[in-house]
Amino acid sequence: MADVNFTPAELYEAWPVLSQEERVEGFEVLKRDDADDFFLQLSARDRAALLLALPFGERRLWMRLLAPDDAADLIQELPPEERENVLALLDESTRREVKGLLDYAEDEAGGLMNTRYSRLRADMTVDEAISYLRKDARMREKTVYYVFVVDAEEHLHGVVSFRDLLVAPGEKLVRDVMRADVISAPEDLDQEALSKLFMRHHLLMMPVVDAEGRIKGVVNVNDIVDVVQEEATEDIQKLGGVETLEGPYLQVPLLRMIRKRAGWLAALFLGEMLTATAMGQFEAEIARAVVLALFVPLIISSGGNSGSQATTLVIRAMALGELRLRDWWRVIRRELVTGFGLGAILASIGLARILLWQFLFGAYGEHYFLVALTVAFSLVGVVLWGSLAGSILPFILRGLGFDPASASAPFVATLVDVTGLVIYFTIAAAVLSGTLL
Image (tube, one colour):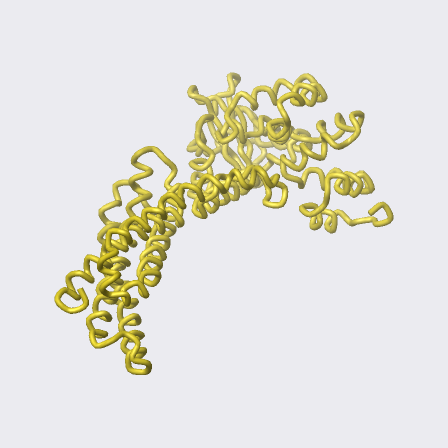
């Protein structure tokens, strides 16, 4: 790689598959301006890994390139024994800001905010404000969407956009131009709730305030994009029956990957063992009517699939704020109709398939029609039950204080597999009594 000069775009594209040595080598051959921009594009995890791989004398340069919130994110990704050494690379004022940010939890508004933002006093004229901001904005490139109006104690009184200032008469006071109804976030607000606030109000920036209404910093929409991606990734991994991974797929060590996946797989395996137990309870019925065993995979997979569909839809609706706990009864009524309709569709397909195979190959014996009815009724029952179980389980978990995404599709499918067998053989006993059973 030493003989190849990557452009910043090419290096960024290849970054996920490069070794650490190749990353450092590629980074060090970039021109200085390109390297600055490239370093700022990286995730906090990649910045931290790159920083530790660089010579010690270069680290101060790259740390001082970062805004306080980005520096705090990088430090949180470092091994504990390295954090104080990296903090010492910052100048005194920035170090105090970063330490203040590190006091907040990573997933709170306070942990996401940038402590550097543009501010004005209400009694300034518009001309004075523009003159001041022209100088101030150079230091606050990431936070120039809005300007916040504060008093001497930093209490938040209003917000004004740069556009409003530019079109206002120069002699007007800032208090006459600002908007007093400011959408703000408490410093301990969870990042998921914060992202919903951004989406609801279509904001580019939001101030973070303490309990007394003093502004502590601002959260930029770019930070919220990262939050949304992180939250969606966690939910998708949980829906797949995997513990949350702390990094990109290719960068997670194999032993850790196995550990993250083994727990859920073992739990699901133990759950599936109940399927064998359930089949053992109906051993006599299977012995008398072997044909019933042919349709076991069909029945249980249909119920598991419908349950997985329902739980995925409900969890996503919860994440988007479309469903709340009090909506559980509406969801049940909806899934009753949906599950019955889906079950009827699959039942008609199953019925047609059995009748066709009997007509072509005589595959199911003289009681084929009763077998077909058993399968059809079972499909209706199992799909209906799967839809209900999959839709109500996220509500139960949220009511108990757990993450609804823990109701993963594999977990719901395992639950419905066991109960689906009971439904199937119970219906078979009723329909085939006096004939095959």
